[in-house]
Amino acid sequence: MIAMAKAAFNKKRPLFTSTLDLELRKKLVNCYVWSIALYGAETWTLRAVDQKHLESFEMWRWRRMEKISWTDHVRNEDVLLRVKEQRNILHEIRKRKANWFGHILRRNCLLQRVTEGKIQGGIEVTGRQGRRRRKLLDDLKDRRGYCHLKEEALDRTMWRARFGRGFGPVVRQTTK
Image (cartoon, rainbow, N blue to C red; front, side):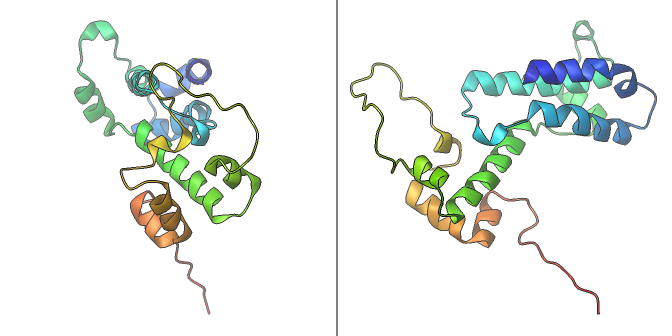
């Protein structure tokens, strides 16, 4: 996905590096490039190497927008100050994953049973050498485990307070 996002950025590079307002260029990049880079991020299992690649892609994007070459020896913190941003790609992925997973846990569907491991079948492999394989839930679970995660998902306000959108529950106002 990163290669496709870089190709999309390079295709529109004159627009993203032009003299347009910084906020407008950031919105354009988020619209055209971010959506390609994070396509399907809800289902990714991120290893440390993947996280490093995603963070470096994020910095690559900001550096290209500001026309900063790697030979200029500008620190990442300085680049982020110039564009008035923070590193947030990993936070965005966790937020999307939590939103999607909470949606699955609130439904009674096949995907929920597959995620919980309640489907019979498959080959049971025991005694596999090496490190345990990362699973979908490893990014969301903390020390409390799956049961607490499921209980929180059933209560939307609690779920959004923990992982959510940062705004709490959605409140709709009606006009009279």
